[in-house]
Amino acid sequence: MSKGSKLRSDVASRAVRAVNGLSRLTGRGSGTVVGGRVGMKIAPDLVASLAKDRTIILVSGTNGKTTTTSMVAAGWGGVVTSNQTGANMPAGHVAALVESRSANVALEVDEAWLPDTLRTTHPRVVVLLNLSRDQLDRANEVRQMAERWRSMLTSSPDPELVVVANANDPLVVYAAEVANHPLWCDVPTTWLADAVSCPKCTLAISHVGTSWHCSCGFAKPLAVTTTLGDDLVVDGESIDLELAMPGDFNRSNAAMALTALHALGVELRGAVTRINALQSVVGRFSVRRWNGHTLQLLLAKNPSGFASMLATLPNNEANVWVAINARVADGRDPSWLYDVPFEMLRGHTVYCLGDRRLDLAARLDYAEVAYVVVDDEESIPKFKETVSLLANYTAFSDWLARSDA
Ligand SMILES: [Zn+2]
Image (cartoon, rainbow, N blue to C red; front, side):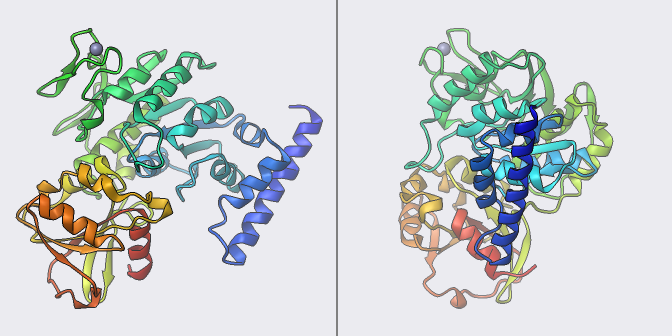
């Protein structure tokens, strides 16, 4: 780095701290994005200069980014720089990299920003979790995203880059099969509706048991590094995965986080103990109290996220609360509710909450699920047991804010 650009990046870093400090102080923001934007105005290559000489793991995918990044950070041990507020574009990365100078860095990255972030940060490892449709009116078409990831890895300037990839998601396999060092993870993956046709030849993909293939030869990779059934095995080593957080979805996330850490030489036994102990991630999966109720908060933002979360619900749970909004951060169009397999809730009674509770009720009606539309939340009868509350983005934030630990 030249003297001039070093000076500019120092000035920019100070500006990031000052602006974010001010933003927190005045209560105008969480202090993660606005400072980053100012810093990058002063020094456009700020991400690159802050990332230099650090050991970086990037985590991307439609669902599980925040949780998996937290698992990577926790499993690594010691002080790890991370953007755990979920600000997963360059301004958020700048804020995290300025906030802590630790050499070990775990960053969650928005899918569309991954090629750019890979180029600027030169990670040692990138974790590709899954690809599915997100909010209909916002996200890039999912196949186009797989194509962009594939060309990113084809032209990657780092021959040593390790790519930890989900072997059960055909779109992820399509992107990662061009990598020099793919580490394939055979982990449970609920949602395959966005990869029914082959990304190479468009013919239908056949799913047989836990395997999949296309007649053109495109198929689930055979040489897997990580398998997760009842037991987790990473690179031949059996690992005692006993997560405090629920669900197969979190087990899959943990398996991929551990594979990434193993690739960097982190000792697996210590790492899994630290990951097992995680109780919640920015409120997700936390048990909260509100108005005499005990609620476990589950975040789900899109059809595949909902499918994963519905699969974590205990069968004997009679009542489930679901809160749906359609504000800007959620995507304005709630028609994605029709892609959620709410039929899984037959036998439960669903309390419909949030701005779009009527859209939810209509969907549940088609799914033949019993429901109650809740106009006044105070009127919900008190249940003795803990109730699962599934909520999409802004609804989740509302419930986290109004409830207590
Ligand atoms: Zn094919």
